Amino acid sequence: MKVGIDISAIIYGTGVSNYTQELIDHLGSMVDLKTFKFSRYPLSIMEFLWNRLHILDVETFTGSIDVYHSSDWVQAPSKAKKITTIHDLTPFLYPAETDPKIVEVHTAKMKWAVKECDAFICVSQSTASDLRRLFNVHPNKIYVIYEAIPSKFVLKPQITKYTNYVMAIGSRQPRKNIERLKKACELIGQKLIIVGEGSDLGYVTDQGLVNLLAGASAFVYPSIYEGFGLPILEAFYHKVPVVCSNTSSLPEVAGDAAVYFDPYNVDQMAKAITEAIKNKEKLIALGTKQLAKFSWDKCATETLEVYKSLI
Image: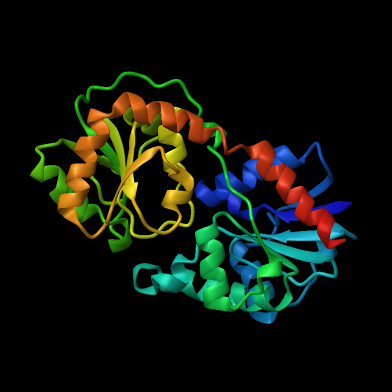
């Protein structure tokens, strides 16, 4: 079996990039894997050719393949069996919070994916449900395969200057719910450190993120919507209690190893943070157990089974 995977998403350094890199690393020993990245052509050109005009089969670049696994953002024509991974459907659920160009690109991609793909991998049951509801994809075409903690976050933490704080990863997007989290921390007099766009610290290195996460009294994930929620697994790995919203994919990822709250209820959020800090040791033990359910070997093996089922 020959599989072609578009790895163009790797260059962005995002969660999708991590997924793509980890998947090909773990699939590499399992199949005759042809990865193809069009470094000779601007990505915008390929998006135009494949999403807009929908011309030029991938086989032009790869030769004959049995399965074509498309990227997160572009859907090329192919004679092979076609599969794509859906990480989240934010551009369709929260278009006002998404760059119009991103909405445009994903809309064009999904037009062809829904029409031509033989299978869809979704990273959570929540995302699978969104896909069925928004695009009427038949359940028989959908496979839920969970991600795992990216290797780049499996680092030894270093001591920082910060003490006695809870940590969050956020941005200016309202769905990230950072403003309510700030109010909840004020209610209980809890120091809050936020990493990400628009925060006091802004973006940090992978090592810096690990350092801050490992030193936190708790990790809080107040998002209203997430397609998966990888930071939860990162918190589990670094033995930090997790407090998170009871919405979208987050309960799937955290299982019984988190204290949950209604993301719209500031008082409930504040109480959940206090409870998590109080029950730190119990939550850390549960988090370690929950983390064991997610691995890249399992992700790659299950993905390979989907490939095989198509040919």
